[in-house]
Image 1 (tube, rainbow, N blue to C red):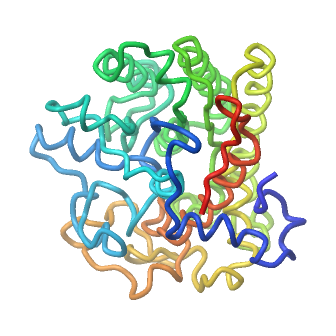
Image 2 (spheres, rainbow, N blue to C red):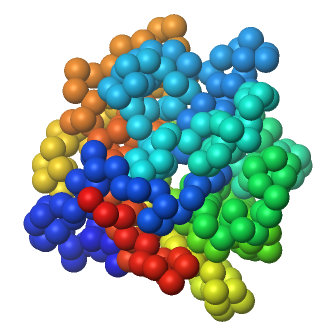
Amino acid sequence: MATFASSSSLKQPLIIVSFVFATLTGLHSPANACFTSVFSFGDSIADTGNLLAISRSTGQLPTSAFPPNGRTFFHRPTGRRCDGRLIIDFLAEALGFPFLPPYYGSENGRSEQFGKGVNFAVAGATALNSSFLAKKGIPNHSTNNSLGDQVNSFKDLLPSLCSSSSELLRTSLIAMGEIGGNDYNHAFRAGKNFKEIRELVPLVVDIITSSINELIELGAVTLLVPGNFPIGCSTSYLTQFQGSDKDEYDPFGCLTWLNQFSEHHNDLLQKELGKLRIRHPGVNIVYADYYNPTMRLYRSPSQFGFKETLKVCCGSGGPYNFNASISCGSPSLKRSCDDPSSYISWDGIHYTEATYKLVATAVFEELMNCIRSLNGEECIPTQ
């Protein structure tokens, strides 16, 4: 169990995760101790530049292409909606891999460039395809990319990577998201009622598990499957539903009913993952808990150096320093707070590098604790 996984761990000292934290913050372990490659799917939580690459052909670059995005680590915009590294970046580093290159827009030299893995995640991507959502009156103005599209792109790429896809996937880590959050985000923004949005949950979870099953049939052996974040603490939702009854907020300022929605998604996802484990007993399906590690930061911010929990670092206006019509990196918003590491939220929807680092710490520990050995050897990165 990850050390950030429950509220009962709040009183435990930080030294408990010192080894994992050290690994994520600078100790590069030999990749072949665990995996030979990493493949990532998902949305903006994991997008390392795909939407930027896709948008170059249209001439309409996303705001993630402009400063102050990327200011903390890369010192330039990279297409990440963050001031620095994402969870997938920290996981790659901890396993001894370079940052995963984006798949889209990389037409030349793919087999060489993607030898250690590749990222298919696209900002704005959904689990359900855009045509299905559109029929329900849920538009996606960011991209028409879906999880199914990403899996198909992966299948198209496989023959150029190796002669035996099953051999490659047997020693690869597959990171399945986070995905599904945008299905709900787009529905809430479209003004759908809560009953309609809740009815999307089993459909989203089914797409995720069906995609996992498809990858397993291709030969995947180890899959990391994230749940949803506590969206009731998301500044964008707090702004959208500002003025809610005070009884709807928890002691930390988050909307309880929205967090319960996230918990519903996560509970159903874990239930279905349990069924997949029974169906595929030789496969490592690891649930990555994004919810509880993030909630721990809201509950005990000072323990982790955070001074602002709900206010946005890169934003403008209102009680939360957030305006939904002005995105971080837009012409009128190219400045951010002095110290992003003291903020949980980067732009009201995405988190700061400091937040992602702590969530990645918990996820990495969960991964190391849960996966079975590969080739009869322990999969434990060495310092």
